[in-house]
Image 1 (tube, rainbow, N blue to C red):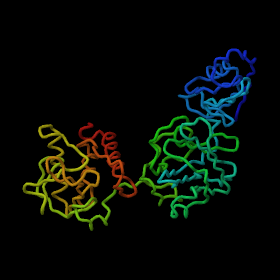
Image 2 (cartoon, one colour):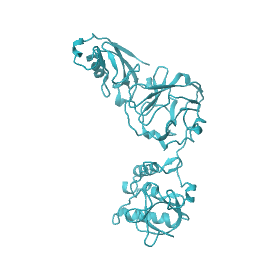
Image 3 (cartoon, rainbow, N blue to C red):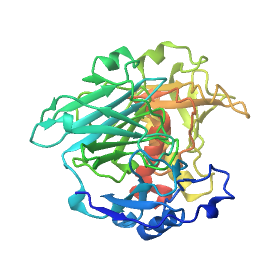
Image 4 (cartoon, helix red, strand yellow):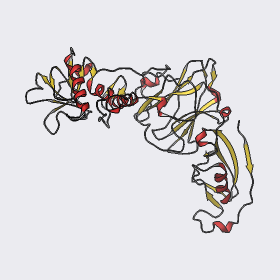
Length: 409
């Protein structure tokens, strides 16, 4: 429930604003982020404005602080002195949070206008979507920039997909509706709200413009079954941009394993993405080895994306021995030309992703804690099971750290 507190004040003398660059009789709404409710109210009163306060759901850490302006106002708006300005104040009141079973389950922020959002009804009751809408906060805005209304009945345990009309045709085929207002990128926040503008669920951070959500498909983890107004990346699985096969079904399990793309085995190793079928000769350490034919003698292979401890360090022997077991017991080994690393490095060694019986040993050494992840391709050219190779390396290190494996022990 909203609670309104209207505080009327005398309009201050016009002479106080004579030195302002703005038109006489007007002031600009300031950025009040981080201010407590009383301080935010007083700041506006000092500008000659009257204040109406509306509570919105929050968490203990932001209780009673400024959440934004209401009535479509944004920071920097020019308003007449004496205006009644609505401010939103976070309230740590669990009873204020709306229907707990309706949540944003997937977000696709892809190439161009390839955009989609999926809503999931985790409850046992059908939901009338006419009673809800999406509110988009663009470029760090504290106020709503665009609204996407919905029309239909969302059955229990079912999904509702909204796509931009210029999205990929295959994605459009999964959409329950389209909206040209579904325009957002990685620095925007998206809120699921009811007819009273009460937030139910939140993707991104209102009032902050950080480009860490762009060019990705994000899927709510299976364990998240209730809505929340506090966004956390740990609640989401990250897929490559424009991946949309999983839209229209929820929950969707994150792949536990991955392997190479079979079509790459037909590409010569000397070309980017190409692969060569080889046999294991021996390895010097945890990130360098020889293979035949063609990668032994004076030639050797340096593993891409890892850097195991130098020989002499106790963990260097552990990494060497573990890699030896992986390669010496494998029935099938492929070397792959990583398009971001190139064919060879400064010392003339070949650079490669090394697959042993379908397992990417580069990532496996990270997962077991024998090395940090040292892989990053800004173009994200390699994708396995819908997930970028960048992300697989990051997840491997996160697992090693969490389990205190190897160098993290």
